Length: 455
Ligand SMILES: Nc1nc2c(ncn2[C@@H]2O[C@H](COP(=O)(O)OP(=O)(O)O)[C@@H](O)[C@H]2O)c(=O)[nH]1
Ligand SMILES: [Mg+2]
Image 1 (cartoon, rainbow, N blue to C red):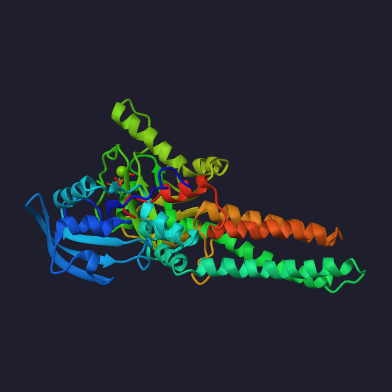
Image 2: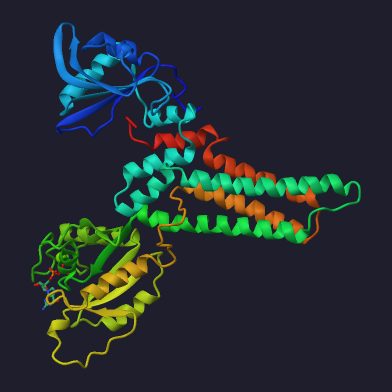
């Protein structure tokens, strides 16, 4: 069991974001939830006598002082999120009211919930499996509609169903093998090698597509970081402003205007692109600008895509050449700006290079399209397929597939059904870990520890 979670106590936490807001919701879950709330909440009915899934209006009164007027939602075990007795107190927002109520609940014998503890209890009580727990975390953290949709798929059990189907397929193969093992003692064989091979291959293909979906899931969850790098005055800040559709960064013909970096996100076709406008690269003795340049280079290293920007008067051909020999894990888009200043069309544009004008917007839509294309190379953009977003699932599905490939190999080498059965059993075990049937404490700690408190 994960650290600190194996407790019988009644837990409390704020379920909404802290700060100024019209309402705040406090959650209380556990054996004493109803007795604790009944000592401070005064309404027509006691919470312990109310029907499940009803709402009561009343006052929280503590030491004869009215703390707030609130609504209390009542959920009796086992039909609550955690599977325990739960109350949700909707009080007035702002941090003072909710903190006061939480302090009172703590002083009455409940304890402060650890991160993800409500969800962990839901898991312990069989209300949700691990794929759903992870989906809840993904849903809360989703920052585009697409990543939200993928999380909902997990929440409504698509991944769980798929995993169970795959497991059933493997169990079918296993029982075929076992029947065959029994009969082979009598010198008979009831199952053909081809039959097993076809079934194994189908399952392997299915799992492979799930493994591949991780990259798509990752891009939808984490987004794409794009740094705009180049010399001073080439138009980096102008480009950022174009993407953001606002005058976010100062644009000026003074060299070295942008001295710190500016980071802003936009959504392109459902994917979150984080643009970083950086200080222009040039020789300088200005300490602030030097620090800015150092930061530019640091951002470049952690980017998914670097827009390397030049203006048409620069000697960009040699720089572009140099860049192509430079492989740091990010993709490079070479962009030449200020096309509007071209006197004639005799411009020699090398491949892999885009010509734009931030002044007239020439080529900017193409640049946006190229960015999207570059970011989504190898990514499955269709939303109908099952997609995984966590490294835990990636690891387990990959492991499952390795066992199946081993089994396939044993089959091809005629190693005997006993050998195949061993690997298929291990593959089935990996699928069991996906839904959390057998899982180590470390994994549970990792999953639930990453939740926010109150969830
Ligand atoms: N003619 C022309 N001027 C541009 C273009 N893009 C930017 N500029 C001008 O170039 C100067 C530097 O632009 P800025 O975006 O601040 O460049 P940065 O230093 O790279 O961030 C400003 O005076 C801009 O108005 C363009 O496409 N055409
Ligand atoms: Mg700038």
